[in-house]
Length: 541
Image 1 (cartoon, one colour):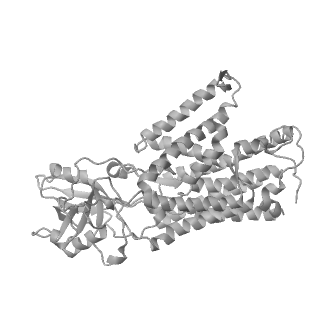
Image 2 (image 1 turned 30 degrees about the vertical axis):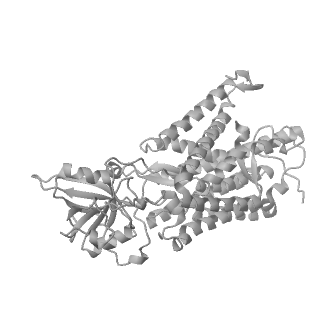
Image 3 (image 1 turned 90 degrees about the vertical axis):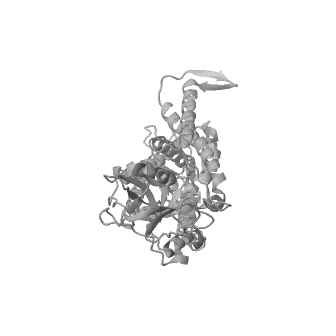
């Protein structure tokens, strides 16, 4: 099972690594409705709105109430769709027809409406679109669940007053600290595991006089040319996902199920093999199998299947999702090896440019005005709720949740007031923001082994990653918006590693990497005390 990991992880990496930007979600808000009963019944509902489009009051006392006009039985794509009684000074509720959110908002505002609520049958989504064509839009636009609108009259009555507001979020959420610890643990452990694997390879080389006999079997390497090809393929796949998301998302989910099960097995098997008892073996298909590893494989497959079945159960599945994600990242960092610092610089720099282009440049060329990265991360635009006829028919029951790409570490935000209405909000960090720096940390650990420099490069690179993550979270708190983590992590790692190599007068060795690996026979496998260091290598150049 483990011997196929390089090929499978290379394929899964091409499918998963390309999307490592933190997802950017709209601001949650509250729709407060009041009925005409005595005493007046009230109820609160969750809404999503785009804070770049409009701002809402932070308290209910500062908000203004408007009478609600339910127009979910007709489209609001032309002035003729406005009812004869008008919608002036109303909070209008519509479902999208054969027009965009911006076009509907323009008609509503020009007709005197004060609030536009879009009832979504597929769950709460983000108002999107290029506002450059309607820069004078002042009307608040928000998405609300269609099921909430249909059940509203039974709760508060027929004459409804609607009020929109958004409670302020705390300046810092402790879920970011949890994500920071997960990311740092995964990168540090993945780099250390890569070093352990390197020591085992060197031991095998000393015994067999062929240092590649084991490494080529269990690990895969990325040369500079492979890095360039890797990044190009990632770019192509991201664009394909942008246009064919509804089909490709299931391929990504399937690959993640297989790769995460394999990764969890490899991680746990490395621990199980350290246990000296319970090594019962059986013969099957001309192979000798350890019974405990067979049961372990069944357990890992079961965990992956459970995740696939319950992947949309946000309340608890995030624990299993993060466990599988950590295992995937660890196994990827350990298995995929960068051969030199040149490859590290090339990989991280190209993905930094990739981040900047797809996050900051593509909004200038897409019709919606949104970046390709954000749209793929958040899923397909649900503004496609359009009908070919003159009447938009929306079922009373909500449809299945939209599928999301399983390429992030997810931790619930510890803002319990938001859980009651808007479900469970999450703080997110993409796998690529862990794996890509982790490959550089792993290279530093292996270089420590090649040059008998203890843990100097490994520790300094890990600390640099921690600093880069902290800067990312500081920017996240200050800007109140999702941040491309590599924008801060890459400079920290590359500069720190370069300074350490330069100060130790090892920059040439560090830059060329494997060209300076050990060529001499090793005695008793890289220090009999397993200290994690190797004798000084001989230069071949």
